[in-house]
Amino acid sequence: MQKIAFIQSNTGLPEKSIVNTVQLLEEDATVPFIARYRKERTGNLDEVQIGDIVKYKSLFEALEKRKGSILKTIEEQG
Image 1 (spheres, rainbow, N blue to C red):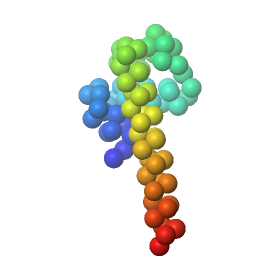
Image 2: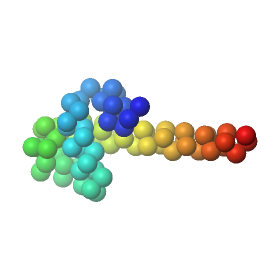
Image 3: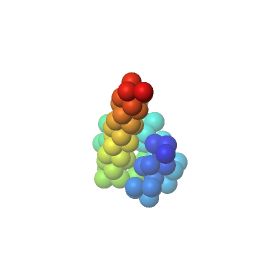
Image 4: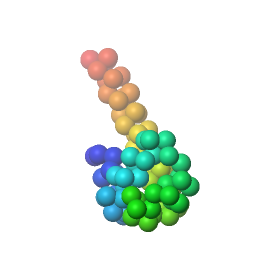
C-alpha cells in the first residue's frame, strides 16, 4: 500500500489535500504554518486534520522501515 492511500484510508480526507500536505511536510513546514498560510494547497484543512496526516505518515514510514528490516533478516537466513 502506498503512503497516500494508507493516510487516506485512515483519515477519509481528500487525496489532493493529503498529497499537498505531505509535500509541505517533506519541505519541513510546520503544522501551524501549513494550517494558517497554506490553506489554498491543503483544501482548508485545520490543525487537527493536518496532525492526523502527520501521525499516519509517521506510522506508515515506521511500518515500511520495520518491513524492510524483517525482509532483510529473512533474506540473511536464507
